[in-house]
Each structure stands twice: as C-alpha cells, then as structure tokens.
Amino acid sequence: MEDNSQQLGIRRTTRDFPPAHFLFKVEGFSWLAKTGVEKYDSDVFEASGQKWRLSLYQNGDSKSNGNGFISLYLVIEETEILPITWEVNVSFRLFVLDQIRDKYLTIEDDNGAVKRFHWMKTEWGFAQLISIETFSETANGYLIDDCCVFGAEVFVVERNCRWESLSMVKQPNDNTIIFKMEKFSKLDRKYYESSVHTIGDLKWKLKVYPKGNVKFKGKELSVFLELVEADKLPPKRKVYAEYKLQVRNQINDNHMQFSVERWFSATSVNWGYPQFMPLKLLHEPSKSCIVSDTLIVEAEITIVSKVKRFS
Image (spheres, helix red, strand yellow):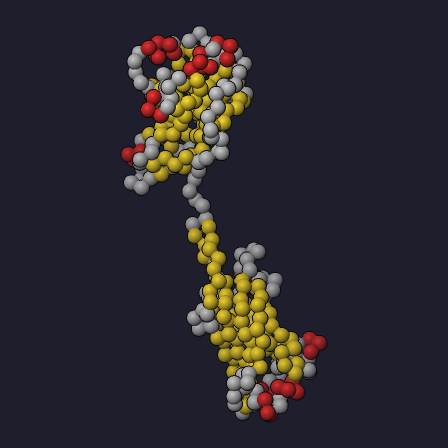
C-alpha cells in the first residue's frame, strides 16, 4: 500500500523491480529505534563511479522537521580524494520494500531535480521519507517481523556538456575586399576571383563575371561574394552576412552599389547580383567605372555571424 502522506515537491510511487544500486536490510528495527542512537549509517557502496552510504534516522531527523517520520539520506563518501573544487550532480531515488506485495515504494523529487553534492553539502534525502505510523502498520508491508528493507538508486549527471555561442559581429576588422581588375578589356575568362580575405574568422572572396553570368552573358556585369571553404562547415551550419557590393567610380563618390543580407551555407556558397550593372553602362566613360582599363570591385562586410564552441 502506498504511503498517503504527501509533502510539496516529493513524489511517491510503487514499482515491481528493485533498486539498481543498493539494498539495506534492518532486522530488529524496534531494537534499533530503542538504542538511543540518532542515526545509523550503512556501509559504503559504489554507484555511478562514486562512493555512497545511506544515513537512516529511525526516529526521524528532528533538526529537519522529521518528527513522526522515518528520515533517510544519501551521503557521498571519500570526498577527501576528490579535487578541492569538486562537485557531483546527482539524480537519485530512495526506496522502502513492501514485503507483502513485493513492491517498492519509490521516493524522489517531484520535478526530477538534480542535486548538487559539494564540500558544503555532502548529503541529500528526505526528512519525511515515510510516516512512522504508515511504516509500522503491518498491512502496509513495510515492517514485517520487525524487519524492513531500504534501497537507493544513484545516477551521476556527467559534466561533459558542450555549448556554442552565436553572435553578430558589427564592423569586423579589415572588412573590405578590394578587387582591382587591370587590363579589363582583355579579360577573356568566364569569371575572375579576388584573393582570399579573412573577415570575422571566415574566408571570403569576390567572384566577378566580366561579361555576365548564364542568361545575362553579354548583357550584364555579374558580381558575387563567396564564402570560401563553405563545404567544411558543420552540417546545418549557416553563416549570416550583411554586406555591400560595389563598383567604384574612380573619379567621384558616385559608386554603383547594392546591399545584401544573406545566410551562407555549404549549399549556398555565394550570393550577389547576376544583373549588377549593364555592360553598356559599365563601359560608359561618364560613369568613370573603368579608368586606365582598370575596374575596381569591392565588398564591404558590415555584419557577420560568429560561432564559438566550448566544452
């Protein structure tokens, strides 16, 4: 029969299978209760790589409002061999065997809270594990022939958590790529690439099609910013960038430019404008885009995402 006493934040259920890590049997429980000793500590047992013991207050832990209850605590042992700043995070359950129905009353925190053991807090448990009245009632099966069985399950939550930080870096250092294309009238390849620049811990380059790309060939200047080595990004990783693509007016500040906001990835390595500027306009002397047969194309990255990973 399940204990009917309820305390806020404590969950009591029953189950058929025994605790995974430790069982503690007391024969002659009434004699233990009469000895006058405040508590009895079990021998050490090992679970989840640490040493533990159970601390039983057979008459209740009066310092923690345990009067009228059995109190039971999980205590970490051999802490002197742990580092000075040690801490162990634990999810645990305590048990009382119902010897009539062969079921285990299971007592644990209602919200599944992980308890932090450290040098100032070496024990956790329940001052009101089960009321002495409920425990002593023979029909409940917890105390039979003056014999009872307690138990424990202990699961250490390993601290090997990895995490990452995503930030948006505004005006990163050395954030401009300048691509000076000399002897522009003699360029005959499909496209040309600038040197690679590291901006925001990532590598970038400009990709320019002097006579246009695909269906705009012979009609438009095509300009793209490309994330170099995008294929080496972790799966699903994306890189955000805000940037300006610009063909410089070499006489005044009347530059031809467009602003872009894009997410780059292994499947989207470059973004830009296949119709950046009509070739007829590009070659118009009054636009001053080509001077001394040189075209200057620029990319200025104003915001770029940055990911840091920690372990």
